[in-house]
Amino acid sequence: MPDGAEPFGQPTETVAPRASSAAEHNDALTARPATLVELFHRFAFMMLLVALAVAVVTPALARPKPPKSTSDAASAQVQRTAPPGPDALAMLDAAIADGRLDNARALLAPMWASGAPDVQLRAAELALAGGSLPEAAEAFTGLMDGPLAALARQGLGITRLREGKENEARPLLEQAVAADPGLARAWNALGVLADKARDWPAADLAYGKAVAAAPQDAGILANRGWSQLLRGRHEAAERDLVAALKLQPALKKARTNLALARAMQGRYQEAFLLSDKTSLATDLNTVGYAAMMRGDLTVAEAYFNRALSLNPQFDRAAWANLQYLAELKAQKVREPTGAAPPR
Image (cartoon, rainbow, N blue to C red):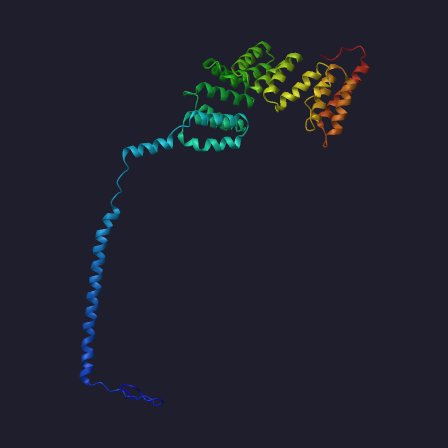
């Protein structure tokens, strides 16, 4: 059998544990404290290394980073606060004018941090277009002492007019056009005030200045057309309203008032030339009203009844017109020689 091999199947020998002597026991007792001292020394050495590492690393971490160069800081500041250019402002103006108010808000948001007066003015115009009149008034007021004072007075004057504060609107608008005679919207608003006061020479002057300053503004032409209608100048009204619709075919108030201008001339069929399914009931009421004012009561009644039949909901305007028409008929029966309604 090779040396060191164990015979197969034979159990290995078991050796009984040998009792340690008293000397060995004493050696073990004296060795244990020495081991503890060595561990303590190692622990102390490790703590010393940690302390040294902290002492070296901490000042490096606390040391401030070198500042950016002056040119880098200046360029970053310019990038953050640079006011928008003319093209960006023109896009924002177009969005507000077209009624694309969500688009206008999105365009305005990145410009706001510049704090530029031009941006603040657009924010005020956006509030005005959105019907937030108190917000618009506050914003325009904050710009009245700056370089955009004339435009701010124009905006605040229009805001006051929409609030029904006509006595406050007029001086603001007059100050605006005195400072800048080319402010078309201020002149237009003065025309509206003149219409309310039935001051026709003042209305002609204001609308004439507005159209001269902004000949492509359909809203101004439509307002002058309505002013002509108020005075019974139906042919002049028709010319202005046709011109407005050439510039802005979807301008609803111009379409309605054009139907009225034609109907007031007795051209009832022509009054419906621009009607469609969505506007027909309204146009029937409008033309019926014109026929009633002209004394064509039978024609007016037919149009009112047709408006009622077309409207899926109750047409209060047509019903009210029919009630007034009935009163006119009754009056005509009682006073057969009475004067005809004004044409």
